[in-house]
Length: 177
Image (tube, rainbow, N blue to C red; front, side, top):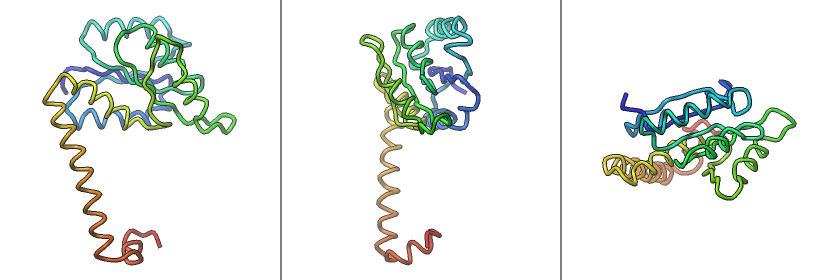
């Protein structure tokens, strides 16, 4: 794997199924990363040490899974001048469906910004991290352009298939009816 440029952090390993989507995207773009389970509450000193080490090692972006009160992303943002992307997590408690994490992540105090993607949208966090890195790396930027062109082509191909087969036949083939 390439030298890590992105730190992917989460407060609990229960967030791994969501956060792995960021790692997959970074791999697709050839961007090195590290994944850690660190807690803003249970291991605050370790979080700060990790941020300092990562900055010294040349990291460019941090992606933080933000569950519950979403403190991890804010703590990371408070200790670095690098971009921090928060991924609000679905909450099993109180039926909040991740809205508490979303609100906590987007409402950081002035001067401590955390870019925030949708609830559980680690894939978008990975893409955003790649775009940040791509601002200064033409090779990464070219991969992002190709990725978006492929997405557009896939949609056109699906619509062509839908138009060719017709609505009901397309639904049947997709197993939707």
